[in-house]
Image 1 (cartoon, rainbow, N blue to C red):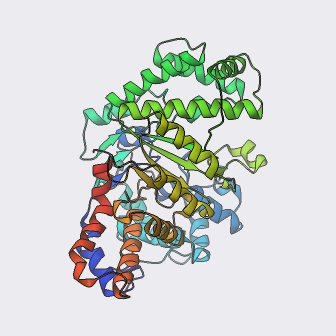
Image 2 (cartoon, one colour):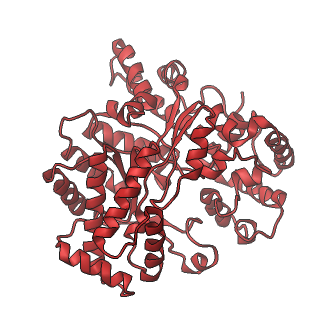
Image 3 (cartoon, helix red, strand yellow):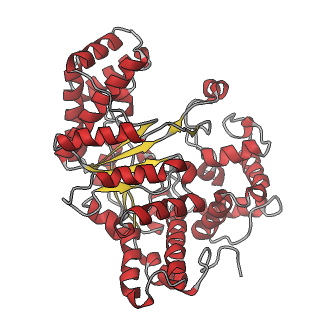
Length: 471
C-alpha cells in the first residue's frame, strides 16, 4: 500500500466513512488565498516543477524555503537565482526526508499523488525521475493553471487585492470563464501603513489615481477608499481582510486623526501613540464600510514580520523571515468589536490567530459579539500559517468545539500562492473526519446520529462557507 492511500490520516472505521461518503465529494470554496490573478487569467503554463513548487520569481514557497535553510541549503538555491531548476529541485529532494513530522512531508507527497499521480516518496534516489515526470506533465494542457484549479473541484476563489488594483485580470477572467468563479478580496493594509511616510505618500498618490481624485485629507482618503470599495463590490467582492500584529482600539478624536494624516503626508514620522490612534480610526472606518456593503471581514492577528533585517534588505518581505508574535490581544480586540456593536456596524467576521496561546482568547472574543442575526456571524477561523498543520488544526477545532458551535464553522482555506495547494483541503477534511469519527468511536457522539454527523461534515467542508459568503 502506498504512503498516500485512500485511508491516509483516517484512524478508524467511522472516520473513513465520514470522509469517503461525505467530505470527499464536496466542492471547494477557497475564500482566502494569494494566487496571482494574472497567472489565472493568462492560464499559466509552468516551465517546470521548480517554478510551480519552489521558486516563481518573488512568489516562492517560504514554507519550503525555511525548511531548506534549516537543512543547510544556501540562499543561492532559493532567492539567489544562480542555480538551474534541477539543482534547486535536487536540494528540495535532499531536504524532504528530513521533514518527517513536519506538515511539508505530508503536503509534498499529497501533491505528488493528487496532482501528478506519483506515489513514490521524494528523496535523492527518486528526485530525477520525479522531476522529469512532473515536467513532462506540466508541458501538457491538462496541467496549465486553470486546469489545475478545475482538477480539484474549486467552485470559488477569492484572491487578495489592494484597493489601488485596477482588477484588470479579474475582468479578463470574468469575460473568459473557465468553470471556477474568481473574485477579488479587499486588503487595505497599505492604506493604513503610515509608519513609513515616504512610502505612504507614494501609495496615497497611487490610490488617488485609481480613485480619480487627489487625496489631501483623511476625509479624502476615506472617500477614495469608498470609491474603490464600491468598484470591488461591482467586481463580485464580498470579503475584506486585514493582516495585523494586533487589534487597534485606542480612543481618538477626528481632529487628531486628521492632523496625523496631514503630518504623515508632510513627511513627519508618527509617534507610537499617533500610530495607535490612526490605526484605530482607520480599522473602525473600514469595518463600517464593510458592514454597510454587506461584506464579511477577516482579521489575521499575530505575525511579527521581517525579523531578519539582513535578509529583508537582501530579498524583501514574505520570504520566510516572519514569526509568531506574543502580544496580548483580548482588551484591544473586545474594545474594537464593542465599538462596532454600539454603532450598529458589526459585519460578519472571521478571526484568525497565529499564536496558539490565543485560541481560547480569540474564540471567546468572537462569540461575545454574536447577535442572533445569522448563524455563525462571528467565526473563529481555521488554523493559519504556522498553525496550518495537524496539531494546529486539531487545537483550533477543540477550542471552537468546547466554546462554540463547531457545526457552524466555515472550514478551510488555502492562504496560498500555489496552484497545487488544494490537497490541503483534503488534508483538513481528513483531519476533520478523524476528529469527529474518533469521538463517535469513543462514545462521545451517538452512532444513531450518523446522518446528522455526516451533514455536519459536509457543512464544514463546503455548505457553511457557501451560505456565509452568499456565493
